Length: 345
Image 1 (cartoon, rainbow, N blue to C red):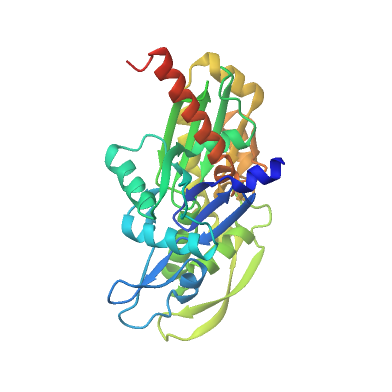
Image 2: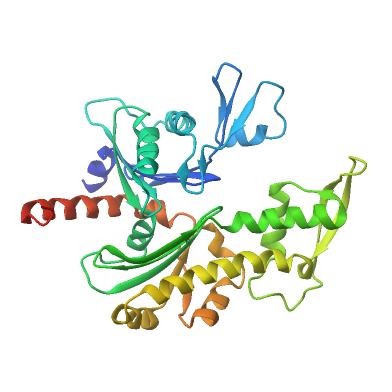
């Protein structure tokens, strides 16, 4: 019986990332993951979106434009984001037709201003016949980790994405201290690309840079700095492709520069947190989430540098979208309690 009611539930969680859009369908108990990219022709008609559009990057003829509508956690191109969402929802048969509107809980950075929130809502509501609520990413991730929003117990989360990172301390379902930076795992990739261009005059793709980071990158530094990876690159002088290699020691600076900024962000939040809550965090530790948190050695380095035990989320990439609906329900209930008690007056 529960399964029948669940399938009739027309509600989804939505996490809009710079490189990936994730949708969690509560009714199907299913996660849909697509690259956040869309391709238009000269007449602004959609040619491709999501995975199909990503395959076209770098191969499009004149007059065809590829666009990433999300940047630094914001809807940089609201209409493009609307078109992308419509395409993904329709291809995955998530209906917006019928009497009951599709309810969307949208994960976003904490503390967005009115214009930034309006752009996100404009993009999401633009898909038609939906009701949308913006929920904090850190709160959504916390609920997926079993957080009790009605408790005064504190919880610390660090979310590392592709182009943004954020750290937050939560208590009683609210944010006590918070900081976000426009730095993420993608900056390590870009650092590797820049290094190879500058030192060797070689050009690699973002995908190759990410492979190098995953294989050789280590936040703590590698004991085997001579470990090597072979890959394809383009010689900028001749324009010809060729095989080349790089060692872990060579790319360490690219990793260190980004990791240092992330640790500084965590330290800032720690220093802003009241001691009464910080004592509990020292006991329980902090949770790392987001795709960038999977960098080798990051848990250990953050633990050593901050003095707070860091552990990786059980689902680093999907935790936020999986907790979005629960966070949205919690925010709705709390809003109603405030209205009944008159505390919002």
